[in-house]
Image 1 (cartoon, rainbow, N blue to C red):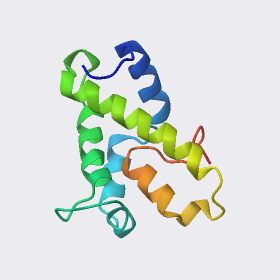
Image 2: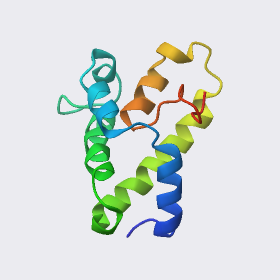
Image 3: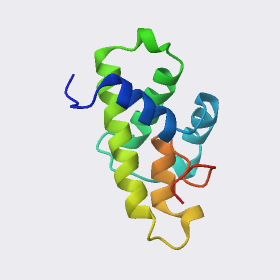
Length: 116
């Protein structure tokens, strides 16, 4: 595993930060807003691909999570932490690209416990 954090730390942060339910995230990923943000070289943005992986991980029992999924969970946690601290300075949070991007990564900053 490439992360220096323990799996228990990753699990706790993941549970705190990835605050969208699998179905909620799947529904979001179908929207134009979701598809409108992020870097993409192959038609689908990195965040959008990540969102699909997050749905799969959230539907996996903790004991069945693969090493690759643990690594992705650590990446997601890091992404959300970085972008929450950056988006704290934005004015129009509800419709910002930052909010849309965070939601692609499974974090709704407008939800209870979100970063907005």
